[in-house]
Amino acid sequence: MNLKNVSSELFQQLIDLGEQLDKDHFTERLDLIMGASVGQHFRHIVEFYDCLKKGCESGKVSYDKRAHDKILEEEWDEMNAKLRELTGWVQGLEENSPLTLEAAYPLSNMGTCEIPSNLDRELVYNIEHAVHHMAIIKIAVMNRCPAVVLAPHFGVAQSTVVYRDSVS
Image 1 (cartoon, helix red, strand yellow):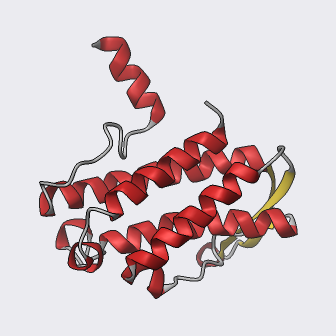
Image 2 (image 1 turned 180 degrees about the vertical axis):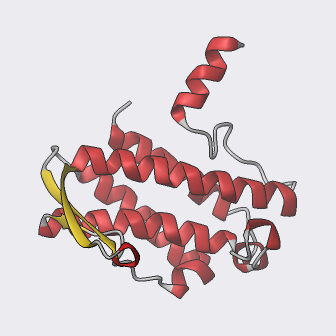
C-alpha cells in the first residue's frame, strides 16, 4: 500500500467516525482527553496535512504555522469537506519531491531551523501523527459513545497491526 492510500484510508476512517457523532460528541470538551474535544483532534490532524499541502506549493513546510480554525473543530460539515478535499489532494500527488521542514524552538533560544526533507518523509510523519491523535480520539469515543463503530485498526500504528498479526 502506498503512502497516498494510507493517508486516504485514515481520512476515510475519520469521515466514517464523524458521520456517526452528533454535534455535542464532536465538540464537547472532555476531561478524559485533557479538556480537548474530538473535533479539536480532528482539526489538528487535518491542519498538519494542510500545512504539508501548502508546503508542497512553496517548497517549505511549517507545522508551527497552523490556522487553528475553530470552524473545523465545531462544524462537522466543514470538517467533512476538508477531509474530502485533502483526500483528493493526496490522491493527486505524483512524485516524491524535496521539501524544507521549518521548525521553531523559541523557548530553547534555538529560534527557527530548517531541515532538508521530502514529500514521502512528511507523508510518513503525517500518517504517524494522525494515528497518534486517532488513538486519543478512540479513547474519548469509546468512553463517551460506546455504540459508535470504529474501523478495526482505528488509532493503531501499522507496525502494531503487523506485530499483533504475527503473534496471534
